[in-house]
Image 1 (cartoon, helix red, strand yellow):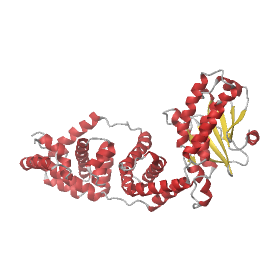
Image 2 (cartoon, rainbow over the protein chains, first blue to last red):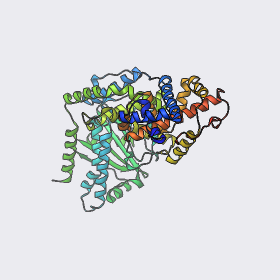
Image 3 (cartoon, rainbow over the protein chains, first blue to last red):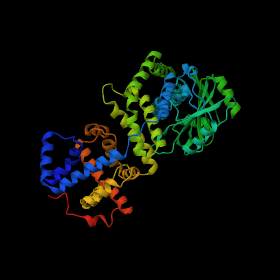
Image 4 (spheres, helix red, strand yellow):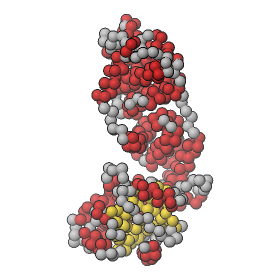
Length: 275
Length: 221
């Protein structure tokens, strides 16, 4: 073994993570070569220095507790959330705390559906719209069932509002809905690689009723031309799919879509009050 | 079937697929806790040394565990859970801290090579000098010297020298060959020594430049 080969295994020799043959060969060389011997000694001392000076730290117990609590909260989910009372500073909403990840996948589905839609002009309006919202609807269902966790969850609506403003690149519209409280928000960064979030969903809650307000800048929204025309005329499109109701409308700059487990009529009433 | 019904079906199916029974949920949670929690200490120490402070380390661990729990279905039982968790944490770390510091995503190899060449030319051969480097150095100086290492090298030094992981484990954590673990560790320790040398010099334990202690190129036979 020459110096170069010895250097290649020097760290392994120091750590004794080396097979017997290579070890013997390297040791033979080190025995003969003063430079490599010094290098070996130095590396050994460096390792010992790091090991003795930089101590392992014990994990803070409150961190372990926190994680356990959060996992259990996620797990408890929607139905049993009432049973799970956390300490006052615990700001998680159990049934919400469960994760937006499924939604993220569904957004991709919704996008592909939306793309298909563009080419199927002859499709009936109602069906077109159903397609448009199906992704958002699934996303909503995932949250309502506690399967997905929004990025932001807080008891304090002002915290959410502040974070929302700092995280999206467009000016979001944080609508006030009477009797409903903002409890969370999620971003679908999937639309791009940029750090700045491209679309936003606000989550409002009142008891077991949820309203999910999805918004995206109108110019970037990929929606069917017919739908675009209708909402740009100021129309609010209401409908239901399954147990959920939804509304689509535009604000001039934003495309908004509200999904809720309220009935279609209730949703319409609530939105009209808030507008 | 009408499209609307299809969508209805799709959503119902989706709901059904995701809805596990209470028993299954509990089993899943217990499983996760039993498998993943024992590695928290290891991950925490790595996070702490990579980020350099408690708050960031805590955030990183929290994010890692919640992510891991969310994707628990993706974990294949029997495979290396520690490596699986480590990779989740590494991704979170990269997303968070590399973006924040605008560091390039990869260490420029040439730069590292140049650096290495410089390190190599400096000799710490005199026993006098060794004493100074190894005996007058405090914990925070070692930590500072470690923090100065390029990320790739810092990672292996932390894993091997602080956390005492085997080369096989490190290779699996980082998806690199064992040979690379060896060479990064060797270089990393050497760079660290150079940083310590600078401290010693600054504190006046060592006078002169590293070159003053130069011997011939140690890597030539």
